[in-house]
Length: 241
View 1: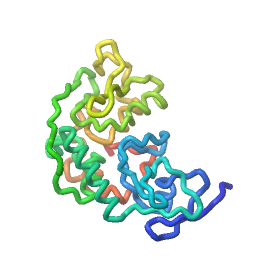
View 2: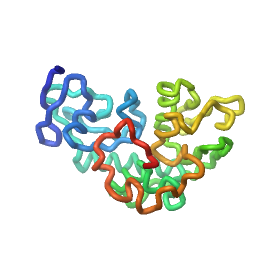
View 3: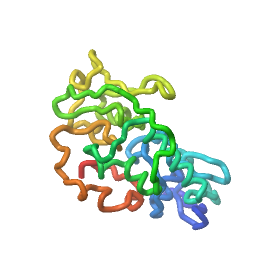
View 4: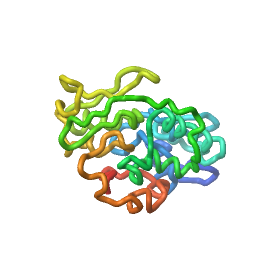
């Protein structure tokens, strides 16, 4: 049996198993830490920074940082929640996330986290990017304006589907999602709607065709409960549930 210990999470003593990260230990104990680029079936990536907490007084990513005996973790403080809200506001300002017109509205994690954090505006000036829409595949499409570069599709295609359909090129504001095909289009790639990569996008960037309103608005995942009630993301999660 793995060694056990205890750490302080917002002043409450929680148990942890040796080797767990802060996010994993908190989730096992029923405490939600907002995140977008993390799923338990993939190695942590740490790209969104939304799960940032203070561990022993220093900012760190909860998906990466191992818990240690006696560690003091702060998560729900006004300072950290304010930081998370700014991160989400920047993601909205950097892309074109028009929730009322997006077929993922109600199933979108970015939208759900914004509600959870009480975001009422985007704070930052919108950049209104004009990126390509790829509808070349018969069963799915990519709206690059909604991609938050979490790289979940990259990891799923590489590690689960073993196809390496997706990749990210560039840095900073020049970073962008790429499709590995002769034309750069999804329809010319090895992508299939049954791929794991087709199921993991947390926003409306990679979406199936002909399924936009299979579940009516108002009855979707986050229309009926707060994302904080889910704690961790089970491997079987399907955003279209």
